[in-house]
Length: 264
Length: 269
Image (tube, rainbow over all chains, first blue to last red):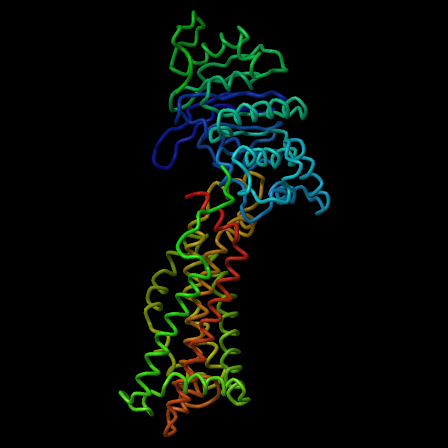
C-alpha cells in the first residue's frame, strides 16, 4: 500500500509544484492520475519514485517511509527511446535491473525472456531497441518493469508518444498486466478517456500547485475492451465528469455540462 | 517509425576512395614534374618516384624498422597511459561539479602551453629515450581524451540516468552503467584525436631531443648528412602513412563498436 500525506514540493527556483497532497493507493489497485498539463503530476511521480526528495510531507510504501529509491518499485517513462539503453540488446535492457535482485546471469536472461513474451515480443530479445518501432520500444520498457517484479509500478504518461492504434493496444496490455500480476499501478496521463478506461480509480489534480481535486471510483467491469467499454454509459458519464473536473469544475457532482468532452 | 535505414549522405565509399586517390596522384605528379624538369634543385626536392622508391627500400631495412618500432612503442605506451589517466579523471570532473570548478583554473593554465615547448624541460629532467618521450606523449594526448570525456558526460540523457536510478542503482553504478557507455563514443573520438597528437609528439620529441632512437631520430640524423634529403622525405612519408593508418583503424573501430550511436543519432534527427 502506498500512502502519501501532506506531500509538498517546491523547486529551487521557488516554484511550488505540490501543496499538501494526500493519496492512498491500496495494494493491487490501478489509479489514474489526471490533471491540467504542468500541474505537478510528474513531480508527484518523481517524489514517489524517490528520484527527488520532497520539501514536505510523508510517503510510505508498504509501511516503510520512502527516503531514497524504494526497492520494490519500477518506473515506465514516457520517452521510451531515451529510457532504453541503445548499446544493450532488448534482452539485456530488460535483464539489467535484475542485477539488483542478486540473480545469476542465466536467471536474469530467463526472466527477461519471460517478460518479453508477456508483452508480446518473444522474438525481439536479440535486437537493439532502435531497431524496433515506438510501440514495441514502450513494450520493452514495460517488460523491463515487469521482469523486476515490483509491488508498485509508476507510469509517467507512458503512451504519450505513440500513435492512436498503438496507444489502445498498450492500454489493453497494461490492463492485462494489472489483472495477471495483481500489481499496484499509478498511471499519470493527461488523456481523460485513457484515465477512465484503464483506471480502477481516477484522481484529478488541481491546477498547480497540485492537490487532490477529486477522487472518483470507476465502477466498470474489470475486463474491458476498447469498443464495448468506451460506449458503456458509465464510461461516458465518468469521462464527462472527469473532463469537467480537469477544467476546474466544482467537486460536487452535478449535471455534467455537454461540452465537457476531452481534455487539453 | 523504424530507425533502421539512414539516408545515404555525401559520397559512397568507392567515390571517396577515388577522390582521395586522385588527390594523391596529382600531388605525386606535380612533385615528379617539378623534380625532373629541374625547376627546383634535385637535392632540395627529389622527384616523388625517388622518394617512394626509397620509402619502399626503407621498409626492408632492419635499422629503419627498429626505429619505427621504438617510435610506435612510445606512441602506444603514451596513448595507453593517457587513456588510463584521462578517462577516470574526466569521469570525476564530469560527475562532481565541485571538482570541476576547482581544477578548471589549473586546466585552463596548462592547456595553452604547446606540448612541444616542454621538450627541453623534459629532456633536462628525464634524460632521453622512452622515459622522457612517454611522459610528453602522455601529457599532450591526455587533453583531448579528458575534454571529450567531460563533454560526453554532459551529454548523457537525464532520462537514461533516472531510469537506472529508479531501479535502485547507486550513483556510482549509474555512472558506470549509463554515463560511461553513453559517453563512450565521445571518449573514443577523443582517443582518436589523441592518437594523432601522440604520434606528433613521439616523432617531434625524437627530432628535437638530439640523441637516441626512433623514426624522428632517423629523420633528424638524415638531415645532417649531405644528400640526406631523400631519407628525410622518405622517413616523413612513413610518419604520414603511420598517422593515416592509425586514424583509419581507429575510425573503423569506432564505427563498428558504436553502431548504436550512429543509429540512435540518425533516428533522433
